[in-house]
Length: 281
Ligand SMILES: [Zn+2]
Image (tube, rainbow, N blue to C red; front, top):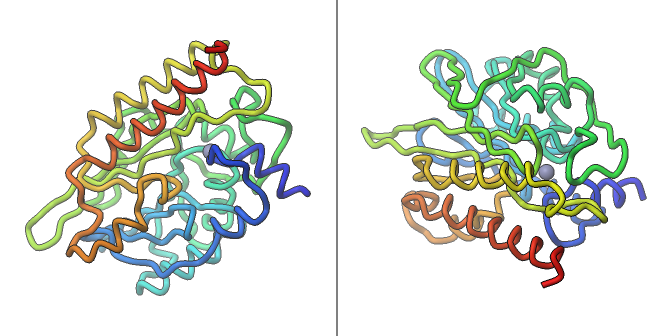
């Protein structure tokens, strides 16, 4: 029951979620190389990415509370040490992307980096009350040692340089992350695209929240303009990751920016449909 309530409150899918959905999202998958020093260490339905260097590694997102041991196992399976993970970057403060961060921080000793709004929620261990999906307190393990990051700020660790790209709307503090990874002299721009799905609790109307609509437009523009050879979205199926991986190409996730553009179009169409429905059209 609790899971069902949390699902309806927190899910990033427009479809009705239930406990079975969470089990599906948290299904273990083998970690794999995305490109160069970037690796997928997430689950079937919740992304987590590891970017590595000889001076330490950076992890993006922690999945559900139950995801932490799976992400840790994926990092180890790739041959990397948990204690070499020095930073954990957060996309947004919902339970299904931030719930595992506290445990991953405990396992690695890493500092966590997030936008100010997300950082406040992580320290609290709950989403913001102004969140479009807020339906009551839905706590998750609180995170300590959270550093804040500005829009466009570059977070560095040794040779790694991860740029924060604010993508609000789904949450006020939503942040995508972008960086470059290279292999054999060829480099690719990679985007960890935060959730931009326009979902909300019952009774919430986007028509009554012009600021949130503006935030979505800001996010659409940011993700359309950013250099994006490869996109990994918070829920990997939202950018067709598993289908792309079946293509058999040497670098199946390289798509020349089409993935980021399609991701924006998907959200924009949903938001426009929702606004039309709210207006009774
Ligand atoms: Zn979410």
